[in-house]
Every structure is written in structure tokens, then in C-alpha cells.
Length: 205
Image (cartoon, rainbow, N blue to C red; front, side, top):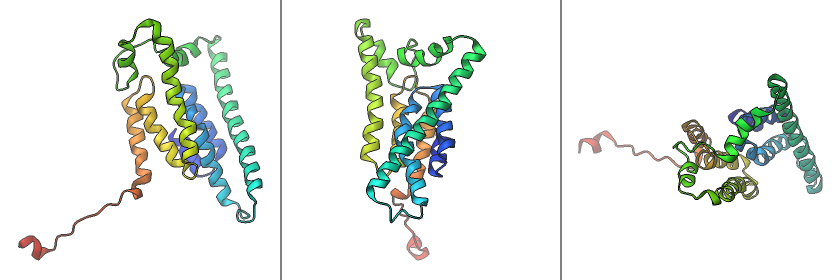
């Protein structure tokens, strides 16, 4: 996810889509970064165009749609190639249930730093499937909402989403929390740091 964000910040759409596909190949939640990363990469490419000032709003909108289609298609192609390669190597699709089914169905309720395990050990089995869907919809709902609300700052949407993933994803871990906290450094300029300088004579007094 960090590589995908870095590539999107530099306008490398293919590299960003490939890195995001690798992240989504190992888990499910990184795919939710697709909307803000698409806008982030689009903004970087658009800012480099010499005719940015002369381009009309309609042309920019058409370019955004075409770019989003290319970015998403590149992501899907890379992800499909990775899944196909796994099938060729293993000869069966059992890996899909082991990797993605574990996160979707949450069979292991071993305590971890996340919230899912505690909620589901207190739940009756008859409500389990319903709340699995609710929890996934809850986490997925942040992606379009933040992307629309932070349209002018897609990098901020990525940073906030990474923080949300570290809390609300199933089987959360310290690594995701550390990565999301490290990304807050990208917005260190937002917080005004004030230092108090004490002169020698004041300190002596």
C-alpha cells in the first residue's frame, strides 16, 4: 500500500496499480484504496500537463473517466494474473478460500489488536452472517465517502483510510497500525510546532 501510494504521488499509474494489486492479492481491504489512489494519480498527471489552464471542464471530466477506466483495468488485469499464476502453481482454487475466505468469514476468533474478534465472541451464531456483512459494509463505506469528501486532497483520504483499516479490518495487526501512523508524517506541516526559546538571562533569573 505504501508503494502504491508513493507511485501514485509520482504519477506512475502502472506501478501504482501493480503495487495495489499485490497488496489486494494478499488481503482484501487494500482494494478499497482504489478510488482515492486513482484520483491521486490522476491529479499528479493532470498537474504536469502544459495545457492544464486551457483545458475545459468537460475535457477534464472525460479525461478523468478514461483514466479511471485504465487504472482500474490495469489493477484488475494484474490481480487476475496473480490469481491465475497461483492457480497454475497449486492446481486448485483452495488458496482463495484460505486467504480471502478467512477474512470474509472470520473463523478464527483468537484475540488480537482489532475489534472484530471481541464483537463476534459475544454474538449469537444466528446473527453472525448478518453482522459479518454489516462489518464489511461499514469498512467499505469509508472509501467512497472519504474520496468524495476529500476530492481536493486524495492523499489525505488514503492516509485516513489506512488508519481506518488498521482498526476495523479483521485480524488487525501492529504492522498496519505502525504504517498508518508513519503516514501521518506526510501531514506534519498541518500541525504548527511552537518552541519556546528561553534566553540565558531569563533562565538565570
